[in-house]
Length: 356
Ligand code: ATP
Ligand code: MG
Image (tube, rainbow, N blue to C red; front, side, top):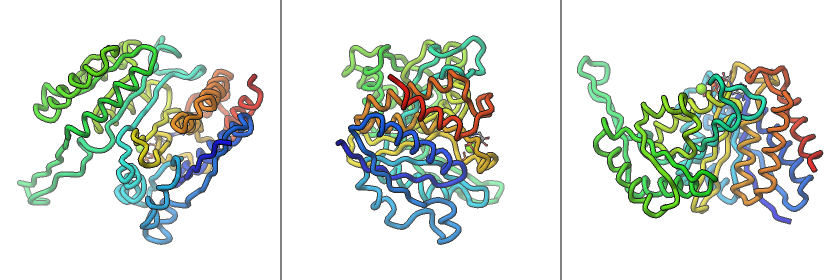
């Protein structure tokens, strides 16, 4: 029996609702498969803990997670706690501490879910966006001078390193190579930003020589948004900087129907540390407790987690079950249905049990 230790951190808002749904689907897969076991430990970290104790997680939080094979994460954020506390107190220390430098965001239109793009359906849009997750625009360098004065200056410095760009580029080329179309689009803004972005272009060309079987092209990020909307079929794997990929993947999520179906994986490709799997959406307090959160993003990221652990058959089974349930029209309100989180989850578990 193959065994994996999973750290579940449901955290805030709808996080606990979707993580409970995800764990239920994972249990159904374990029973169905019979050859692997997930040993799940749940941590009560998040905004509730912050209100009780003044910190989102214990000081040695990352240390406690180190021995796990993967982290299954819900959402952070609460209306009464500032974002810098929720993000910097929990999610970012895990991402950075475990050097999860590749943020991988698959996007595809699931059967039964409508894209806002007219005439675009399943098969027309099948992308994986690779986001650089450790440096660039979010490296945290910059400052403010003459605060509040008319001459005030604020700087926000993007830092790109040869090591950082090369490793994300290699990851993206390797991923593109593993997909049927072997197609990669490298996004930059090197017409207007003349240093880091030009280096990004140069490193892309260098790494490309290691992957002669991958077809690749370069796009400026502004033109890229147009291409995503006008010609989604022309794209497959996409790599972009921390900020640019952040924006492009929200657009991608919207084009695929809803934030409620968009998953993400924060990966340490060298496997020195546990990787972290989460839905892209946040805590969504407007629907918390109503039982209508869409669990599909969390199912999908659970499939990414199984893939990462090497349980590829179970991952594929989970995605087939999700696609069947969506195609059957068992959908939550955000994607135009009337089903509850529980309806969708029960249907996915049933599909896992019943599949031949
Ligand atoms: P954060 O500040 O952490 O980003 P948020 O409260 O802004 O969180 P998001 O998760 O970013 O909320 O989502 C924006 C809106 O999209 C939510 O308010 C909600 O209505 C909808 N939404 C997001 N995720 C889901 C989901 N899983 N199911 C249904 N609706 C969702
Ligand atoms: Mg938000």
